[in-house]
Length: 318
Image (cartoon, rainbow, N blue to C red; front, side, top):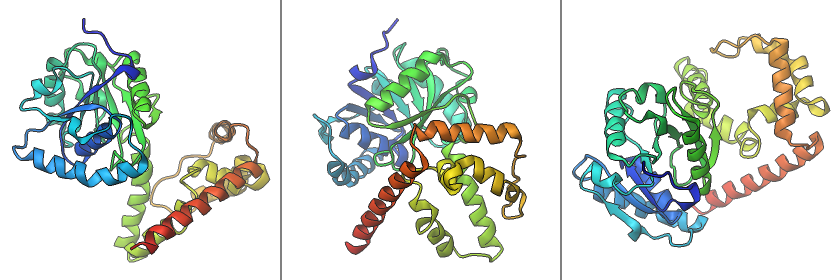
C-alpha cells in the first residue's frame, strides 16, 4: 500500500477543478511553496487559471511568501490520472452538483495512489453522500474553504460515515502546515458551521429587503459599521459574553434570554433550556482561555482599533 506522507513532508499537491475556488487553492498552495499540478475538464482553463494566480500574487507577496514559492511551480495536467499520479494530497473543487461530485470523487479515488488523502471543497454536501461510489472511502474528507482561499484562512474539515479518523486528523494537520486556520468538526452538519451562520444573516437580509424594511446599503453598513468590527477577534458567542458585563454569558442569558422569543427574526429560536444555558456559559469560559472580562475587553478594543485603521487606510487609498 502506498504510504501516507507526514503532513510536514508533503511537497506535491493536485488541485482538481480550477474555477474561482480551485484556482484560489492553486494560488494558496503555490504561495506556500508547494509543487502544484492542476486539472480541469474545461478546454480553456489554463489561461484563466494563470490569470487568477497572477491577480492573486501581489496580495500573497504582501502577506509573505514561503521559501521556494514560485508561480513556475504550477504544472498543467492533460488528464485527471496524470494530475494525481504523483500527488501527496488532492484538493477537489468541482461545481456543486451531487452527481458530478460522486462521479468525480470515485474517479479520483481510483486514480490517486492509496493512502493519499483526497479533500473536497464542497460548500454544502456531506462527505457521506459524496463518497458513496468510492472503493477507498476511508481517505476522503471535506476541506471546506472560504472565498478567496488564498486570503481567507478558515478551512472546516470533516469526514463522512466511511471516513476513518486518521484521514480527518491528517487533513487537519496538513492544512495547518499549509498556513490555514482549521476547525476540525466533530460530526457532519449540513452546510457546515460558518456557512450556516452566514446564511442566517443572509436570510434575514433577504427578508428585510423583500419587505421594504431595509436597503442593501443599510444592511451592509449595519454589519461593517457595527458587529462586524467586533468579530475579527471574537465571534458571536464571546461578543455576547462581553455583553453580560462582569457577569459574562451567565448574566447575558439570564437577563436577555426572554428576548430570544421576541419576534425579531424569521428563524425559530431554540428553547433556552438549563442545559443550553450551561453549555453556552461553559463554552465561553473555555474560549476565554483564562482571560477575565477586563482582559477580553482590552483585547477586543485593540483589535477593533486596528481593524478600523486598516479599513480607513484602504478607503483612503482609493
